[in-house]
Image (cartoon, rainbow, N blue to C red):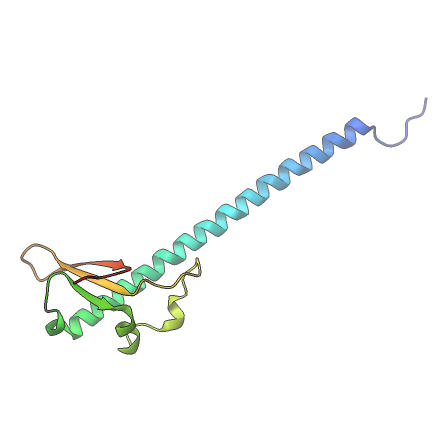
Length: 119
């Protein structure tokens, strides 16, 4: 008997193999996209904290309490940040406050980006 073409089992095996390869590719691409978003968010946080440090140097006399809160809007209006640079990867807005806390009795501060600031 002369055989032409593939059997149903052979075709199904090829389809299953192709589906597995597609699944691996999609999961790899999704991981790469998520890693890129995380990296972008970290970079933006560093950019904000660098702007805060510049603000601190220029406005040290305005830090009147410990902890002290600074509105992120002041960084933008003061020219320390550009609003377009703050579009977070997950499309959320930047929290509205930066909290300064003095480290011990030194003149160094720890910075946190926070949603509210009761101080």
